[in-house]
Length: 117
Image (cartoon, rainbow, N blue to C red; front, top):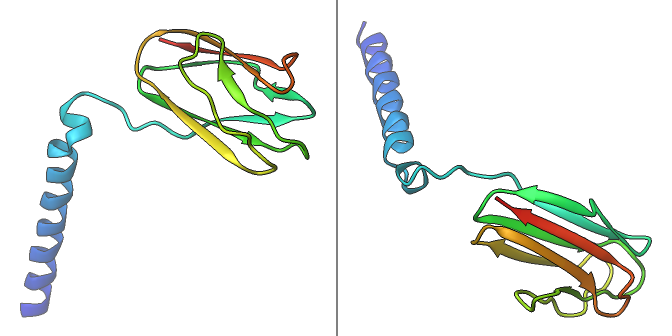
């Protein structure tokens, strides 16, 4: 009987501590959502997807899948990556709503857009 009582007590303690994490976690306290990774791939000299819409405070990551380097830069100078070789990544956090057109500075025909709402 002692083991059964101990097991029930342990289960209650785990349940309460789990509930406390959900209630008091800083992200939930601020009403923010935990977001899945958002990725844009550079492949065959194109951005895919070409246009994406994300919420404020989203992190967008670009991944170069081409065999040549690319530099990602917003047209208004808000963000710019270093030259990315194959499989290298660049991430940027969008903290303000707006539309952010971008391009590859090495291959200016490569165009994309991030819409932040």
